[in-house]
Image 1: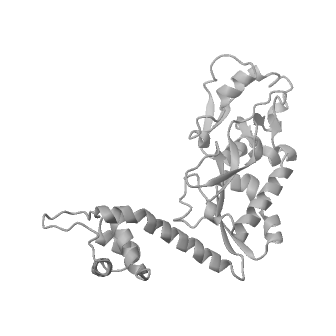
Image 2 (image 1 turned 90 degrees about the vertical axis):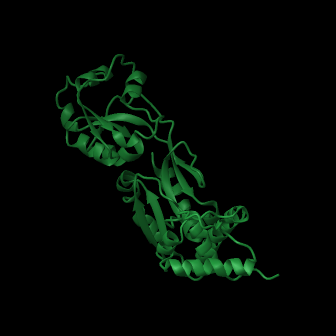
Image 3 (image 1 turned 60 degrees about the horizontal axis):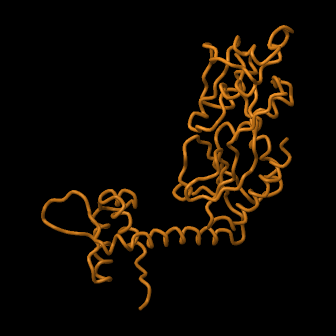
Length: 305
């Protein structure tokens, strides 16, 4: 028995089952609901079995049959493999487009200052950056590779550790013009502290209270403070003299090296339990553009102090 060639009918069936509606499936596929219904009926005729329960009760939602429900995971996996196959065909003769997802702050403070090196080494690869703090669907949004910050586990993705980081306080050099200021960690209780709200989703990330305890400072945090939901903006606010920021070393590296920011109390070392990871779908690992970018990221991370 030959395999069915009704790919459009299979797409119509899968979308209808997922949305439980011919109408919503039609919107996704950019066709009419009648066309979706005809495709599904043609597939049922070819298979010789119904795929949805039909009755006269006026049920609003489509309900797939038990046999159809059992088949759907394999059909969806098949479509995923077809997408990967098409990507491999696009690789023939050219490296193509590389879509990378990173946070806005990581892009601004680490990736963009270095990306020219990758573009010079791989001029045939066009890089498209997707910068977002929200999780993205790598398959649906055609993401090739990304850098994520966390504990190293994300559903459906492979994760290779890229680099660890410390957290430490930084401030503008102007705040240190008064020699009596910020002599010891406890003096931070008299300062305006800047809090990075972009880390609120990571319960294990060490905040100001954790750093102060590591420095031997007891008691509650000062009442004054500024809260910002972007790590790059946190550093900018500190560089402009608005307060003391608890910096992430990967983000703050160039600002500290250039003197825009000064690391305070370097004798206190606190390594974050979270780290940066290169993430990608396992079935895309062999794509030349993905392999090239992963190798380049590892080389750049190795150069990062």
